[in-house]
Image 1 (cartoon, rainbow, N blue to C red):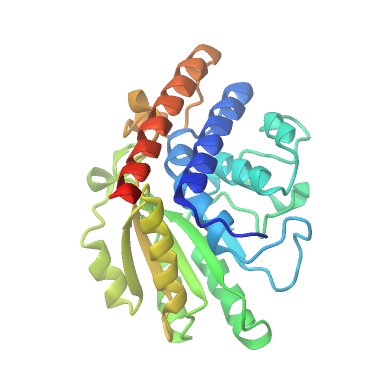
Image 2 (image 1 turned 90 degrees about the vertical axis):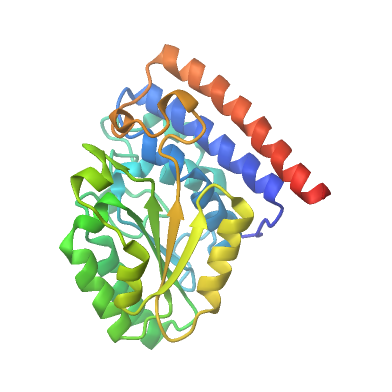
Length: 290
């Protein structure tokens, strides 16, 4: 797939993805809005700049693998896959419908292209990624494995067991991405189970730790580049994001962790997304013009 490096084009894709998320969730009447909107910039940079993949041949053996450990943000996953060409965008509006390939959590049984594993129960993705990376080291040395996590998910003990194993086997072909938005379904992550000092925890386990702003597209691209160049140990990107990014009225509101917009709210949200897109686009032009 042709890789896009122009931040303006990547920003445009990410905001189209946000609009698709709102439309599909509103049509479904249920689903996870906040985390999906917050991850749009990261998914865009991953699928349109960083990954080696081929939507026309989803099972190409030399493709990089993506493990969505937090399956509840399936809307951003599905919207990105459709934008990349894995399936027609019209299928997004079957989300959560009976018989649809787009279930509330990604499932291998449904036959949707671009999905490497089923997900739903939290905490398991890094273990799956570690197993894939061990096999890749032996038989497909050029591929990389990306696993995507939420900060609340890091409260699961299995994450840290996998983190130890990845370092033990020198898996520099793994990049874990943590959506660091500070909010989970019951409220602020710090109130539910404090994670800090998070960077120090990952370093103590032997990982290459990369911090970035999860909405700064050049910063996200630089973070992926640093992970790609790291040798001898796995990398983790701690990406600070805003849950609900793009819709000001719901940003950082934990009540929108698992709630879908009504048709009337969707119209309002789409207007807000368009407004924020124009502001963000102007910022990129300003930076490039300096």
